[in-house]
Amino acid sequence: MDKEYFRFYIKVHTALNIQAIAIHNELRTVFGDDAPSFRTVARCAQCFCEGQEDIQDKEQCGRPVTEIIP
Image (spheres, rainbow, N blue to C red):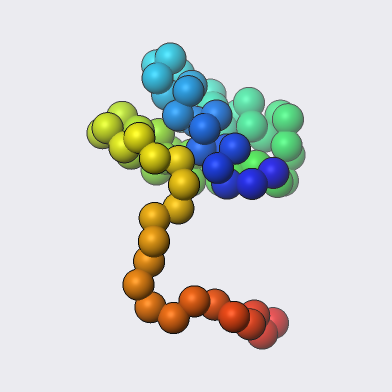
């Protein structure tokens, strides 16, 4: 599942005044270990409460990652 899907889910449930812990528990029930961490859910919920509208990643400056070395 991609990040935008999770962010949309968090955004809608935050708008319905559902607490971040409940949102996280629902995501863990459905997606298990693939669900975002509670900290990520809480951070996203806070941003949406503060008025953020966009669910896509913001552009970042710097060199893009072209190779991942384990």
